[in-house]
Image 1 (cartoon, rainbow over the protein chains, first blue to last red):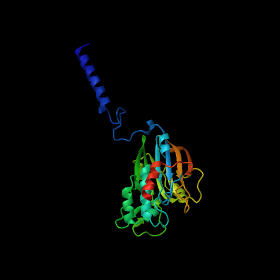
Image 2: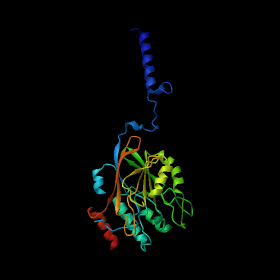
Image 3: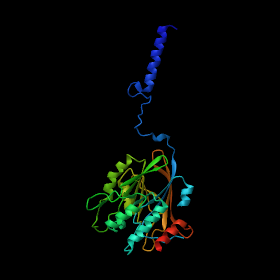
Image 4: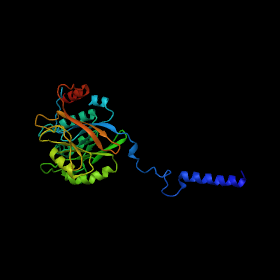
Length: 65
Length: 242
């Protein structure tokens, strides 16, 4: 491979790397999400939650047992 | 409660208010102090301020709020003197990978209270809910408004996942979803003088990826003799009784 061809390949690779590192056009899918954006909910596992709730104790302190 | 926490990874323990004092108790501040200590021991996650708590008066209530090791919530009860909120309006609680926003609302008192202004719960909730939604995946409203009023509130204000309310005319047999918004509404105890604080609601629910609640199962559990007393709680009560 000639020196000119090698230089051309190097320029092409450098361009690809720059694109992958955020140097591409606005709206590119590559790394376009900034850290400040909300995390996607799609990857969170659903969870089981138990809510215990009381109301109107009205000062009651008598043990239940 | 200890058993439930051993069995389940994610448990919230909430109180809808009117917890600390009853009607016309002479030693109300002592009683309230004892109950706050008990709620600290049980590691409550949040409590709403009710009109009965406001009835303790400004000095007594300030002291009790300082003793609570959990958020004491009201988005609509203000000190009359400076129009600042009496408690926190809401709390954002991390539960697993989710943030649960718990908003407190105080029932409008039956008579004007000299130390406080209580704003309309529905108007306040409509404002606060949008603020909480920016910070939480799921919104729970904790309030001592009567159950039937809570159904109206849940129908009128969208974006709420769950309302934990109070004072049912008749104890509901299941968790109800209001058709207008799909919000779940619960209440655990139908109090009568001499019979209060003797039931606890238990909601088992799935939190989906977007924070919505589904597959709910609910029951009101009677705290009868079949449930053994906790030794730590018994010792705490005995200390106050001495």
